[in-house]
Length: 336
Image (cartoon, rainbow, N blue to C red):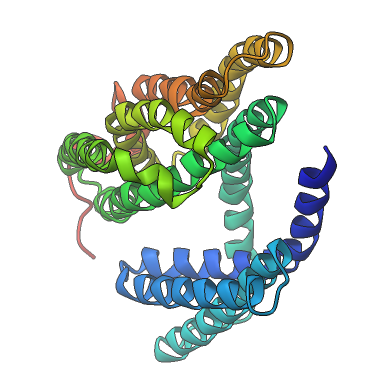
């Protein structure tokens, strides 16, 4: 409520202008990933990040737009990234003599898979929004602290998710070749890499824990409350690394329906815990450090555990491979 809600509303209204460019960029990124070209997305993302940081600083401070300047800087960057990807996509189409006209069959297939993926993504966003609601219920200071922890998690998430993206491409290629043994090997190898990468991130957060809080706030109360929440974040990173890697395996296998239904189940498992925590935070008014840690525990802890359980159930057998009957035993399809 109050200034927080007013500022957030203004930021959201401006940010919505970048929604379509953002979707264009995401679609083009998916195109390049499907072609196993991850260098161009990296170059575009790095350039966009640099431009966004510069624009945000100029618009927030010298121009004096404050929070709204941050929104405008992001929108301008999103438009630039979308135009860049459109140019890249048109060049790729021209080089391969591919038509840029919409194809009914292709659009129907995208609608089927995209529909399930939208449900899956919506479930992830629901988990985030529910936990933000917990932090907001505890007051502006807890909400600000949660934003700091969430921002750090977001940076680490991109690093961990890179493994999942690589897994998508590798699993997709092996599945297209009908190579069941290779798919099983990829599942095991990506699981180990996920845990290992998450453990490396854990060490990074633990070593830098003393200074990380100062990146997000100078408020002494928050600086005293952040260490415990950051410690909890660190402890869950190996689990998070495994979840992201296995998410990539199922995405590469086009197991979209299961991911969507599992996402709904994850939210259902979160809701009872969320309800208890919301009651506790709004009626008992715990100290800021406790409220912040509990808010993050709902998403970084319990919601991640729910995702681990539902992914494990699917990956326990070979049903996730979804190979055609002719190659389900691991034989490659005959060459044409």
